[in-house]
Image (cartoon, rainbow, N blue to C red; front, side):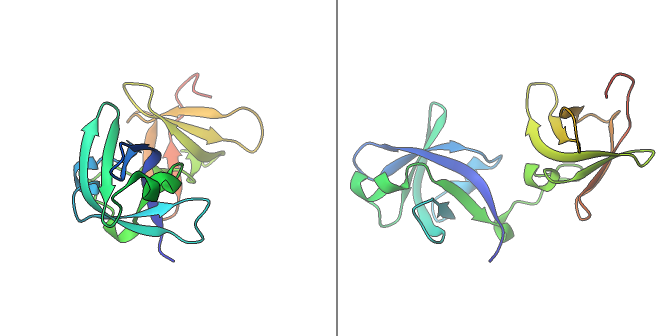
Length: 171
Protein backbone atom coordinates (compact mmCIF):
# COMPACT_ATOMS: atom_id res chain seq x y z
CA UNK A 1 0.00 0.00 0.00
CA UNK A 2 1.42 3.44 -0.88
CA UNK A 3 2.20 6.07 1.75
CA UNK A 4 -0.39 8.78 2.29
CA UNK A 5 0.00 12.30 3.64
CA UNK A 6 -2.64 14.36 5.44
CA UNK A 7 -3.95 17.45 3.64
CA UNK A 8 -6.99 18.19 5.82
CA UNK A 9 -9.34 17.13 8.59
CA UNK A 10 -13.01 16.76 7.73
CA UNK A 11 -14.76 18.38 10.69
CA UNK A 12 -18.38 18.84 9.64
CA UNK A 13 -20.96 19.04 6.90
CA UNK A 14 -21.92 22.36 5.29
CA UNK A 15 -25.49 22.98 4.16
CA UNK A 16 -27.68 20.23 2.67
CA UNK A 17 -26.02 19.72 -0.75
CA UNK A 18 -23.29 17.28 0.26
CA UNK A 19 -20.56 19.79 1.05
CA UNK A 20 -18.10 19.30 3.90
CA UNK A 21 -16.00 21.59 6.06
CA UNK A 22 -12.28 20.87 6.06
CA UNK A 23 -9.53 22.31 8.26
CA UNK A 24 -6.64 22.50 5.83
CA UNK A 25 -3.25 21.00 6.70
CA UNK A 26 -1.51 21.63 3.38
CA UNK A 27 0.73 24.37 2.03
CA UNK A 28 -0.90 23.88 -1.38
CA UNK A 29 -4.68 24.24 -0.82
CA UNK A 30 -5.31 25.68 -4.31
CA UNK A 31 -3.86 22.54 -5.88
CA UNK A 32 -5.05 19.95 -3.34
CA UNK A 33 -8.67 21.12 -3.37
CA UNK A 34 -8.97 21.93 -7.07
CA UNK A 35 -11.65 20.23 -9.17
CA UNK A 36 -10.56 16.80 -10.40
CA UNK A 37 -8.07 16.15 -7.56
CA UNK A 38 -8.43 12.75 -5.90
CA UNK A 39 -8.19 12.75 -2.11
CA UNK A 40 -8.42 9.67 0.07
CA UNK A 41 -10.72 9.66 3.09
CA UNK A 42 -9.38 7.78 6.10
CA UNK A 43 -12.04 7.17 8.74
CA UNK A 44 -12.35 4.75 11.67
CA UNK A 45 -15.56 3.37 10.13
CA UNK A 46 -13.83 2.49 6.84
CA UNK A 47 -11.78 -0.67 6.31
CA UNK A 48 -9.74 1.00 3.55
CA UNK A 49 -9.30 4.56 2.27
CA UNK A 50 -12.17 5.92 0.19
CA UNK A 51 -11.08 7.84 -2.95
CA UNK A 52 -13.03 11.08 -3.39
CA UNK A 53 -12.82 13.32 -6.48
CA UNK A 54 -13.13 17.04 -5.68
CA UNK A 55 -15.77 18.84 -7.76
CA UNK A 56 -15.69 22.19 -5.98
CA UNK A 57 -13.92 24.09 -3.23
CA UNK A 58 -14.07 27.51 -1.67
CA UNK A 59 -12.51 29.10 1.37
CA UNK A 60 -14.89 30.17 4.14
CA UNK A 61 -13.40 31.75 7.29
CA UNK A 62 -10.83 29.21 8.60
CA UNK A 63 -12.25 26.32 6.59
CA UNK A 64 -12.39 25.01 3.08
CA UNK A 65 -15.80 23.92 1.87
CA UNK A 66 -15.42 20.92 -0.47
CA UNK A 67 -17.82 18.95 -2.61
CA UNK A 68 -17.14 15.52 -4.10
CA UNK A 69 -18.24 13.73 -7.24
CA UNK A 70 -21.29 11.54 -6.62
CA UNK A 71 -22.16 13.08 -3.23
CA UNK A 72 -25.02 15.57 -3.51
CA UNK A 73 -26.78 15.61 -0.15
CA UNK A 74 -25.96 15.91 3.52
CA UNK A 75 -27.03 12.32 4.29
CA UNK A 76 -24.31 10.90 2.04
CA UNK A 77 -21.46 12.88 3.64
CA UNK A 78 -22.60 12.95 7.28
CA UNK A 79 -20.67 9.70 7.93
CA UNK A 80 -17.41 11.36 6.74
CA UNK A 81 -17.25 13.67 9.80
CA UNK A 82 -14.12 13.08 11.85
CA UNK A 83 -12.23 11.65 8.88
CA UNK A 84 -8.88 12.73 7.53
CA UNK A 85 -8.25 13.61 3.88
CA UNK A 86 -4.93 12.43 2.50
CA UNK A 87 -3.02 12.47 -0.76
CA UNK A 88 -0.99 9.57 -2.14
CA UNK A 89 2.80 9.94 -1.88
CA UNK A 90 3.32 10.12 -5.65
CA UNK A 91 1.13 13.26 -5.71
CA UNK A 92 3.20 15.19 -3.17
CA UNK A 93 4.46 18.54 -4.44
CA UNK A 94 8.24 18.81 -4.83
CA UNK A 95 9.70 21.38 -2.46
CA UNK A 96 12.49 23.89 -3.09
CA UNK A 97 16.00 23.07 -1.87
CA UNK A 98 16.24 23.33 1.92
CA UNK A 99 12.50 22.89 2.54
CA UNK A 100 10.97 19.74 4.00
CA UNK A 101 7.58 18.26 4.73
CA UNK A 102 6.78 17.90 8.45
CA UNK A 103 6.32 14.15 7.97
CA UNK A 104 9.87 13.93 6.56
CA UNK A 105 11.29 15.50 9.75
CA UNK A 106 9.09 13.78 12.34
CA UNK A 107 10.75 10.50 13.28
CA UNK A 108 14.28 11.73 12.54
CA UNK A 109 17.01 11.01 15.05
CA UNK A 110 18.67 14.19 16.38
CA UNK A 111 22.43 14.18 16.97
CA UNK A 112 24.82 16.89 18.14
CA UNK A 113 27.80 17.80 15.94
CA UNK A 114 29.86 15.71 18.37
CA UNK A 115 27.69 12.66 17.64
CA UNK A 116 25.71 12.61 20.91
CA UNK A 117 22.17 11.27 20.37
CA UNK A 118 19.54 13.63 21.79
CA UNK A 119 16.36 11.80 20.74
CA UNK A 120 13.69 11.62 18.03
CA UNK A 121 11.65 14.50 16.54
CA UNK A 122 8.04 13.84 17.60
CA UNK A 123 6.31 17.11 16.66
CA UNK A 124 6.83 20.46 14.99
CA UNK A 125 5.40 23.61 16.56
CA UNK A 126 4.81 26.86 14.66
CA UNK A 127 4.77 29.55 17.37
CA UNK A 128 5.85 32.46 15.17
CA UNK A 129 9.14 33.53 13.65
CA UNK A 130 10.50 30.00 13.18
CA UNK A 131 9.38 26.42 13.65
CA UNK A 132 10.34 24.58 16.83
CA UNK A 133 11.07 20.86 16.71
CA UNK A 134 10.03 18.78 19.73
CA UNK A 135 12.63 16.11 20.44
CA UNK A 136 11.80 13.17 22.72
CA UNK A 137 14.93 11.97 24.55
CA UNK A 138 15.34 8.45 25.96
CA UNK A 139 14.47 9.89 29.37
CA UNK A 140 13.56 13.24 30.81
CA UNK A 141 11.70 16.23 29.43
CA UNK A 142 11.21 16.98 25.73
CA UNK A 143 13.90 19.14 24.15
CA UNK A 144 12.78 22.12 22.03
CA UNK A 145 15.04 22.84 19.05
CA UNK A 146 14.51 26.06 17.08
CA UNK A 147 14.67 25.47 13.32
CA UNK A 148 17.26 28.17 12.60
CA UNK A 149 20.50 28.14 10.63
CA UNK A 150 22.66 28.59 13.75
CA UNK A 151 21.25 25.39 15.29
CA UNK A 152 20.17 22.94 12.57
CA UNK A 153 23.32 22.12 10.62
CA UNK A 154 22.33 19.07 8.59
CA UNK A 155 19.18 17.21 7.56
CA UNK A 156 19.42 13.76 5.98
CA UNK A 157 15.83 12.78 5.22
CA UNK A 158 16.84 9.51 3.52
CA UNK A 159 18.61 8.26 6.67
CA UNK A 160 16.23 10.06 9.08
CA UNK A 161 19.04 11.99 10.80
CA UNK A 162 19.35 15.63 11.85
CA UNK A 163 22.59 17.20 13.06
CA UNK A 164 22.44 20.24 15.33
CA UNK A 165 24.88 22.71 16.84
CA UNK A 166 24.17 23.08 20.55
CA UNK A 167 24.07 26.78 21.46
CA UNK A 168 24.72 27.69 25.12
CA UNK A 169 21.52 27.22 27.12
CA UNK A 170 19.78 25.16 24.42
CA UNK A 171 19.82 21.96 26.44
